Length: 169
Image (cartoon, rainbow, N blue to C red; front, side, top):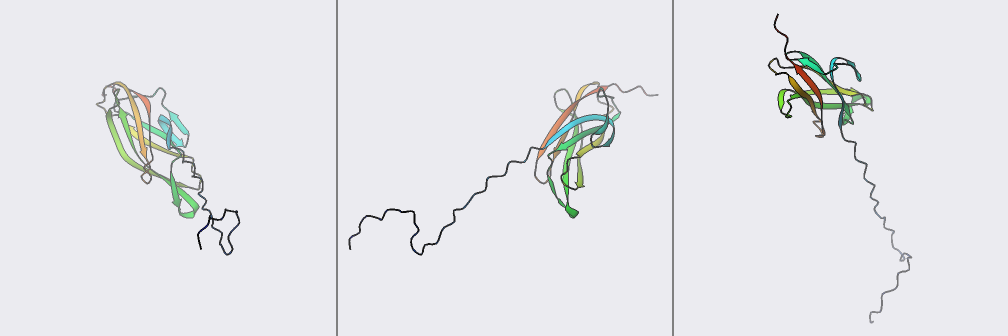
């Protein structure tokens, strides 16, 4: 029997044919917001999240101490016991000179916070001693933070004026 033209498609299934499911690709999830460090403050006291006593203007003498306070926004969390989540941060604090080069470095430090979700009140506060040998001038304090699990990273800086150390008594 000679082959004739192929039958036209009718849109009707052939007898005995099984329907084939068309795979549905779900829409990609929106990207997670980028991690951020917010509200960097040179402080004399930290009572709780957002409750700090700033040093204004941010001026310290060589050899004195201050608290570097910064809030972590959109920080990754992982499940913890009891339906809670834990945020983990590894961070360094640096005093940078006018050229952006480290004049003093502190860290790395690690901090974690476990709470019921959503965790929105993460912060780090670190006592920093201005080196007694640091010459007077304008500097920046930098916090460089990383989530060790995901590699998410954020940095922020704020100004610091270093004055001469008081004379010995």
